[in-house]
Length: 285
Ligand SMILES: CC(C)(COP(=O)(O)OP(=O)(O)OC[C@H]1O[C@@H](n2cnc3c(N)ncnc32)[C@H](O[C@H]2O[C@H](COP(=O)(O)OP(=O)(O)OP(=O)(O)O)[C@@H](O)[C@H]2O)[C@@H]1O)[C@@H](O)C(=O)NCCC(=O)NCCS
Ligand SMILES: Nc1ncnc2[nH]cnc12
Image (cartoon, rainbow, N blue to C red; front, side):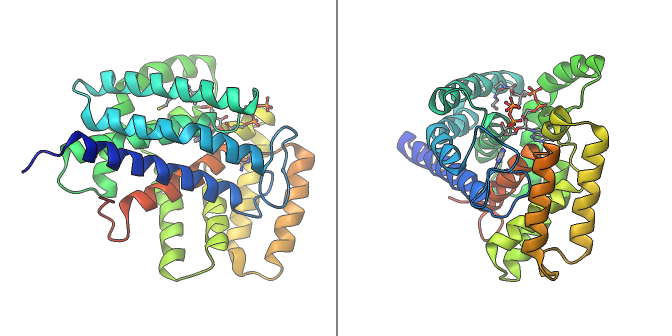
C-alpha cells in the first residue's frame, strides 16, 4: 500500500476536527432540551447561552484535529499516546476557559470527544476498515490502563464514575441507546431536530450523569431517568403536545436545578460518531 503524504494526513485530521465542531453545534441547536441551553431557553444555567456555546465550539475544534493527528501518527504504547492526547485536552480546556471567561461549556466534551478523535486516528493507522467495533476497540485500549488507575481513587472517594466511567465502559450508553436511536431516525427520514431530542431522552433513561449528581442527588437522577423513560414510552416526539410537554419539563428541571450536561455531551458524541462512520458505516476518507 502506498504511504500517505503528510499533507493528506493533515487534511484528513482537519476534516475530523470540522465534524467535531459541527456535532457540537448540532447538539446546542437541538431544541427543546429540558434543563439545557438551546434556542428556547438557557435551561438551568445562569452563565451560559447558545452564543457562548458557539464561541466555545469555535475555540476548541482545532484541538480535536490535533488529537486525531496524535492518534494517527504517534508511535508508542496506548498509555503514552493517551498522555499526549490529554496534554492537548488540557490546552483545549485552557483555551475554552479563556474564551468563555471562566465558564465550563465543554470541559466534559473535550475529554470524551478528544478520546474518540484519537481513537479514530489509531483506527486509521491499525485497521483497513473503519467501523464501530474497531473504533470502540481502539477507544477502550487507549484509555484502559490510565483510567483504571484514576477510577481506583474515585471509588475510594465514593463518587460517581462520570465521564471516565463512560469511557471505560466503551461508551455503552452511546452504543446501546444513542447511536441506534439516531440511526433509526435518520433511516426513517424523520425531522432531524426531533430525532436528536429522542436520542437525548434515550441517553437520559440510563446514563449516570455526573452533572445531575453534582447539582442535585441520586434520587433526583433516578427521577430524571424515570421522566425520560416515561417520555419515550409515551411515543417520544410522536405523542400529542410533545413540545408543550418539553416546555413543562424545562420549567420543572430549572426549578430543581437539573441539567443533564453529561447526556448533552453524549448526544454531541453520538452525532459525531455517526458522521465519522459515514453513510456506508465505514468511515469518511
Ligand atoms: C476527566 C475529566 C472530564 C474530569 O472529570 P471530573 O472527575 O472532574 O468530572 P466528571 O464528574 O466525570 O464530569 C466531567 C464532565 O463530564 C460531563 N459528564 C458528566 N457525566 C457524564 C457522563 N456520564 N458521560 C459523559 N460525560 C459526562 C459533564 O460535563 C457537562 O457539564 C458541564 C457543565 O456543567 P455546569 O454544572 O454548568 O458547570 P460546572 O462548572 O460543572 O458547575 P457550576 O459551577 O456552573 O455549577 C459541561 O462541561 C458539560 O460538558 C461533567 O461536568 C476532565 O476534566 C479531565 O481529566 N480533564 C483534563 C483534560 C483532559 O484529560 N482532557 C482529555 C482530552 S482526551
Ligand atoms: N446544551 C448544553 N447545555 C448545558 N450544558 C451542556 N453541556 C453540553 N451541552 C450543553
